[in-house]
Image 1 (tube, rainbow, N blue to C red):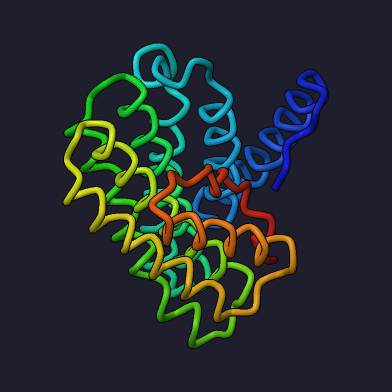
Image 2 (cartoon, rainbow, N blue to C red; image 1 turned 45 degrees about the horizontal axis):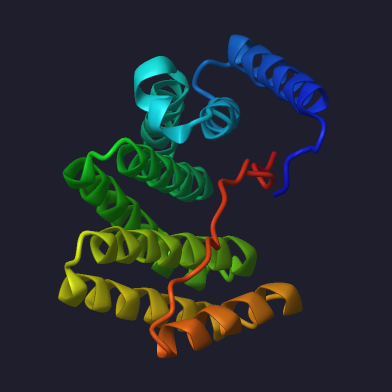
Length: 220
């Protein structure tokens, strides 16, 4: 989802959302969906950190996001809240993706590789459940994010001159984006994905496709 063009307005909305989720947790500290919401506020704060390379050294926002998401996941499992578990797992994946980008920007390539692969594995863990429950929107986002993680890994290793590793990762990205196309995504996203697939066929670098999501469908 796009952020407001007005930074002050965006900050105000984040603060309002944070208060709402904190109030909900004051009433029920074990409310997994509110934990996810609060974690997403911290995620947005982390995502807005510039330059991204400073995220891990100057901000605790991503750590707080991970903490809330991990707690939400545990709470959802305890209460057999399958949808809460799916949303928390997806959110953990987005946090790993952002962590990978921060490590990459800071030149910590080994740590970046690990974080991006954790993101991929996390998204993989919910694909079957999303298909079974016919959650097309979130399924599309999970495929999009998984493909973007492969793409970032491919780009990172291509820049290091490891052409074989990069080629294998670009192929994984291509397969993931093709899986997303089979879901009949909205026209704008379909056009974007088709451009990326055309670029990969010609060996061109891919433009960014993924941005973090503040989970909107938290449910009641």
